[in-house]
Length: 477
Ligand code: ARG
Image (cartoon, rainbow, N blue to C red):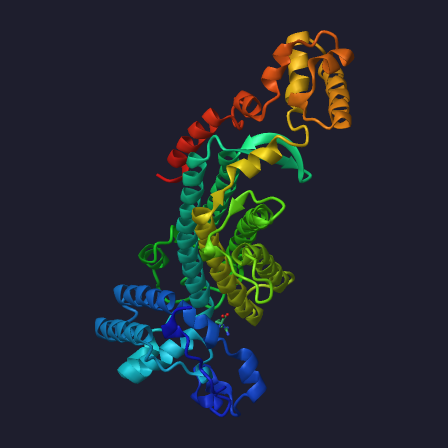
């Protein structure tokens, strides 16, 4: 949250009589202090101020156009709202807990600034369509920010992939050395995942982009409003078709949280790899001082805290999704105050994902692979056994299952002799399969292995260079 919004509305406002509140007409006594405390949302929903003012300006202009409001009142309201935006951005706006939320805080302040005309702004609208509109606009802005940020992370990954299109590393399954791959290829795997994360957010944006404004409390309104006009002014594609649905669903927030949780899961997998790769037994990559911390007792330590925190923060993202799903399940139509609990998880998820993306992009730019260490491990664990089996199929015409058996026996023999496959003497090989020739040595090095993986989407350095160029076109333009 930006500094200007940080000041907390400290007093609970419990002493303020109900009659002085926006909804106080039928009330005689004031709320209990605990009622006030559980009800108040201004400390977090003040983050909706810009969207709330934009929504009010659009509503006001429409009321004037439809002659529901005089031009004079409309101008006073618009001027007052612009002034309030200035106050909030300057940090001088008096947020007050007794006005509960951002909507009533702004309306109350408008009354102080322009007098009774302020009371006309709420004609033909309710806080229910107001908050649904504000929140959609906020999530839409968050999606736009996050999409750009994910794109930035893709750019960092692609740049490293280009640099390391031919850098050999072990590819793993079950975290056991499986087959040699290239580091660039591994990084481009994350570029694909992030591309899908972006498209999930973009999908969510398409569906959320309908305007609830004018649905009023739940039933629509008797005033001759123009919902198309307000929808257009706020950049929505159209007004939401059903007033009950418009004020009471939060599926757009759930979709956003689901997309954020999935993106966070991708980041956590990368972060986990960074943790593994920087550890002493691996030493595949090195992070500079900028992305590591020391230990207060062990002077030699370089801990990958940023990666660990990115790994952990995906837990918060998942928690936010679970929290809002739980709030929404079983809620009868239409609006219920339960829905006020939609904002905290969404704000937290957006902040968390933003931070995790920034830290990950920083680490990607910072990391330097140790090509020698990666190569050593890539060549260990009989990682070219599949290449050997493929040779037996290709050159000797063995069925793959038979070739797999022969290659397995050769691995066992090499293991017994304590050598790698490339070092296994030809006579040893021929003892198991007499038709093997010296030509087999051609496929047993890790370089030959990766170079041979030229199928579409494969790990060969030439493929990686082409795939990185394609990724630039697909994701960065
Ligand atoms: N602060 C409320 C929220 O976030 C605004 C809507 C209040 N509506 C109502 N009928 N009390 O949901």
